[in-house]
Amino acid sequence: MTTILRLPADPAELTLPALLLRNTEDHGDLPALSWRTGDGGWTTLTWREVRRKTAVLAAGYAALGVRRGEQVLMMMGNRPEHWLSDLALTHLGAIPVSVYATAAAEQVAHIVRHSGARFAVIEGATELPRWEPLLGDASNALEKLVVAEAAEAGPHRTYGSLHASGGRLYQPDAFEKTWRETRAEDVLTVVYTSGTTGDPKAVPITHRMVVSNALSLDTVVDLPDHVEHICYLPFAHIAERVLGIYLPVFRASHVHLCADVTEVAATVRELHPAQFFGVPRVWEKMAAGVRAALAGLPEEQRAAIERMGETTRAHIAVRERGEPVPPELEAAYAEARQGLAPLLALAGFDRLVWTASASAPMPLEVTRFWAGLGIAIMDAWGLTETVGVCTANSPTDGFRLGSVGRPLDGLELRIADDGEILVRGETVFRGYLRPDGTREEALDADGWFATGDIGRIDDDGFLWLTDRKKEMIVTSTGKNVSPALVENTLKEHPLIGQALVHGDGKSYVVALLVPDAEVLPAWAAARGIEGPVTAEHPAVREEIARAVEAANARLNRTEQVKRYRVLADEWGPDSGELTPSLKLRRRAIREKYGAEIEALYA
Image (cartoon, rainbow, N blue to C red; front, side):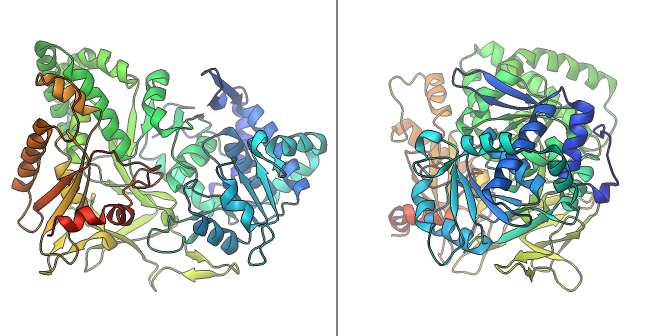
């Protein structure tokens, strides 16, 4: 397990401000937060500097009128103003709430009304049209906007002026007195669910829940002290809120802010981190990049890498079974890792000791690919309502590639009669917040929370996900189909980068397929195909047809894709097909490509 640093109080009574003070006292000169500057370099704050800036900002927010217990909304990217404001508001006893930058105006208005927020901190001109109309609207309490980009603030308060006023007004005694009034049972943040099936719901999360989850995680994750973390998911997502703010404060680790998700691979190559968390789409894209590099190597070199991959997969398989690794395999594995080191170094993965994924089922083909490079991705599972991680694989306590691991300490699982996963325990929330501050009960009489996920638990206690209950396809013949299962089977062919299957209420399943733009050129070059190669190229169409046929051979009759359409443009958050955490927006895709889907049933 990770070395747990000094805990400044009983774990059940710890708060985030107490941990930040510990970091200043024990690790004040260590790096805490880094972000890119205009010249491409990094600006870094130590833990001592972070706490000083937090104190100054807290004074600025107090002067603005922020009061204990009230929610303050933030819509900014992964930038220092967001991260530091989060801590500053927490030290005031206020409740920082991050809102997805992709939220529609109607969702923003709902969150403003529901939260009763009087203040919001936003990034700049892109956000203003969704927030300015709410000022002065009698249906909500919003009074003021603070804008991070000073040149785009217009008549609104700038973050810089707020920081400057905090510098003038900061009183050390008042700051220390205020944060010490916070209790472990107080709400640390409210996370609004994505609202894909209705209005976003408000999930309150306390200091105690966060600390409990951090302690449980440290029993299954073995990391170096003060490890770095590349922070690229939105802070409105529970995964990055835990991984990018709360765990770094708990572990006194080093956060590198990555403002653009498309720069994640480049940031990894630059930093060579010891740990890396990637949602499945990020692992898929990185695998595509490595495959493209491999395709350019001579045949003899590729064959040698494949032989080394067979050794690393065999080594991982023995560890999966919990068996001692035979000496000869251990020696062969060490030799293979040494041979793969240059390739891993090019990807920035040569120092990795822990890798993980969550948010959606990982395609098994992607897991196998990375295993062939000696990287065992520890899949995890959780929800906003469970403070993020609920189950996890562990390289030290046991793992099964393809599963999402076993429950953390303090949590229990069971499977309902219809296959839905139920969870209960100390980090499970008690209910959604209503606008008046009361809670809508979300647990049954025995304390179980129905997660909405479908899965099974094997004989060794590992949880295997099937799909989201609401996303399961029920055909016109009454058969159930897991879209994620079919999509991941299709994506086992490296040329298929993205897939969505449809068939609810229909007699058969169809699919929309998007070729992987990074794999396509290397695939074409390896086959001697010259010139630009697009999704329309006959050779690409023929290969995708073979990929669908191969996938169907592994699926049962109901799951098989009878017809499909190949699309040219990759899906992303900006074009609306993916969430900010890179999961499929199924409803949005079905609406956008409704005509194409219906044509597949013509």
